[in-house]
Length: 267
Length: 301
Ligand SMILES: Cc1cc2nc3c(=O)[nH]c(=O)nc-3n(C[C@H](O)[C@H](O)[C@H](O)COP(=O)(O)OP(=O)(O)OC[C@H]3O[C@@H](n4cnc5c(N)ncnc54)[C@H](O)[C@@H]3O)c2cc1C
Ligand SMILES: Cc1cc2nc3c(=O)[nH]c(=O)nc-3n(C[C@H](O)[C@H](O)[C@H](O)COP(=O)(O)O)c2cc1C
Ligand code: FES
Image (cartoon, rainbow over all chains, first blue to last red; front, side):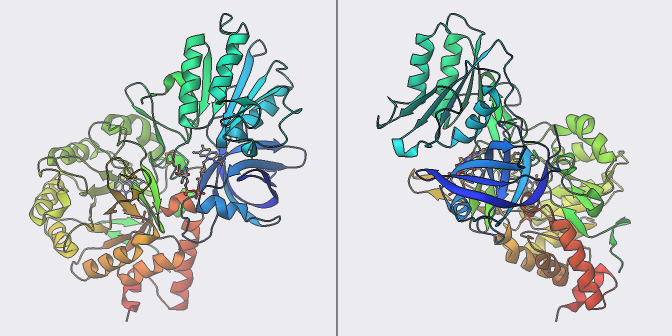
């Protein structure tokens, strides 16, 4: 794993891409290791003590050519509101790259990518990385309403299945509903081992994806979210429940990507 | 200036420590922070058996602070020796093992087992853990128990014994004096303050165990007052910890009477804090013609 470091870098662009969602593009220092899909960074949004902690965000894109990286974030509270106020040339204080990336599928395996809510960033990054090698890639993206879906989804990532909870755009229902019907209309469920799920989004969505993967006998990788302190494995604050004697794993260093079979999905 | 700090018969090469529980076992920060700047590395609490830790979520932000409910999650004594000590042998900093347990016996086990390890410079005795024998009350709240436990540990080791004080008591100076009477070489204060937050939408406490430990800039004034009072109540060195986020906070601790300091929560936030604090100490010393860390305390009018 390439070493993480703290970088003081600069905003290139910060623009709204859906209701309450923004994409922040910033300079990626040439000496920094290239971020991989599934990895994240933490940002200190304020130099004061409010908000205090750095906030974690998954990389949504990395462009080697122009030396830039991006995140897609939703405004939820103080830190993300401050982030939304950043202008080009403003400084950003990042700690990156952090965490384990998504394991990539081999050329025989068909990747199915599923994103809900703030899970969109890392899934789009993965879709971009896989698109050239896996033409059969499927991307399923969901939001509560049409306004919550990023506008520029089509084209770049092959065929996209969009869903909204209220049916205002694409399929009506959750991404897990769409995933279930997609899996049943393909021969995937009988041809197990040939597809792999990648999911990022709210916990009930990850749990639903996990159950479907078990039913179909396929592997699912989930990128989880947990409140973080250090983000480098030192504080045990970001624990997620896992099966096995240790009972907890650290989202920041052992994750945030886990094989869904390792997680203790209670509730 | 002379940055060294004398504790018992041992010396720290500078007054800057990193607080227990915020710096893991050192290796986590190796790539991020130059350990040559760290005078003392206080490990995560070590208990005889591994502990999985508390229910999740374990962290929540508060105004200018954070609450944690990690629950002494640690790898336990055996894996500390096999997995963590090898790295700690290579660090330039003084390695101070934070010792914890749920009864006296646990403290003895940890210190006895590790006593012969050359890589370990000393002990920080964490008395803030709930004690089963005391009906869950923290060990560190009863002066007589603190004195006896310190005295027993004193007999087990030649290395410096630092007793870490909890601020969750009526008068922290009585506990500090009890530690001194028991033979402690220093005291460190403060550990986290009991606190909680409530989610009004869900009508639940944010942390599953209701309360957690408050740290970060919000506790700075509490830590400073503790150091100020304790350093006037005991003759042994007092190590200041709590809320340092800026170099000026560290200077305030030294002026309050601290012989050394620890940085906790700020490790999560600003990896440049250690260098900035050391620079500030040297600059301040030059400006005010201070030749040693011990002289800082005399500046306060
Ligand atoms: C590995 C990882 C990747 C993430 N990737 C993204 C992403 O790509 N896009 C995105 O919009 N969001 C992402 N998040 C969530 C993001 O970190 C939170 O939305 C952000 O911290 C909210 O901060 P706030 O001050 O605006 O809101 P607050 O009002 O502080 O909190 C709103 C919610 O955010 C979460 N949160 C608060 N503090 C932290 C913290 N220190 N660490 C983690 N979560 C916290 C809590 O669930 C809280 O309920 C990710 C989280 C993790 C752990
Ligand atoms: C996540 C976390 C874990 C901690 N774990 C321990 C511990 O294991 N033993 C201990 O004595 N103190 C522990 N502490 C307390 C700190 O060492 C320190 O006393 C306290 O956080 C105040 O300093 P700060 O405001 O600089 O963080 C912990 C603090 C935090 C934030
Ligand atoms: S956030 Fe500290 S261990 Fe993961």
